[in-house]
Length: 279
Figure 1: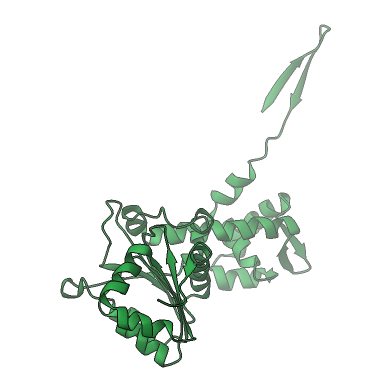
Figure 2: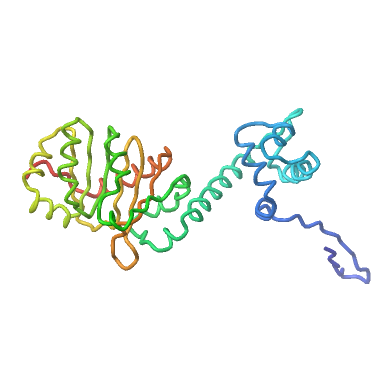
């Protein structure tokens, strides 16, 4: 870009500015540069490492590395390339962004159709932690039954944390059996769900409360989420935006980051609920 600056006298001075592309464009417009930054998060790499891992030629790689070096994101250390301190920051945020896009794009219809209003904003902002998930879809004949896969995963768990505004007839006896097996069970029910449990399954409720390895909490706030987080897996089911519970689809993951995300969701509502000690 050429900018002509007129002085107070008769002379006109011409000054040339080289405008560097902004950092966001440098990263977002090149798949190669993104992959280089993400790969370097694991540690310094040689050109050979790049070729083997990314399937790029040296001639295709070096110009991209030079651009990243010019912007103080990558530095050369002998025959290896590494992230600078600023590069580590940028690459960390880039990884989060990539995983966020993956998490949303992978199940775009699921997130678009369901009500996510009861997922706390700080956890919704970390939806990237659910990047490694899949959807379990019940068949028509199993539409109103708990997912068999989820039940099997719960049985294989030693510690269970659950949130539910729904009481399915299968669950009172099912969770009693888990408590008898010394599984650690903590559940949060909405007030309506607890009232239904107390009215229709009072004997099972009373017995369940007698176990030291069981905890039951009541949320006075309606929670439009069914969530399970165990030492084995994480699962979440949501309501449609019209208020109807989606009994067909469960989002499930065995990834540690998803399990920890589910634990945080449980603890968020646990802090806002009241523990029931006895009837």
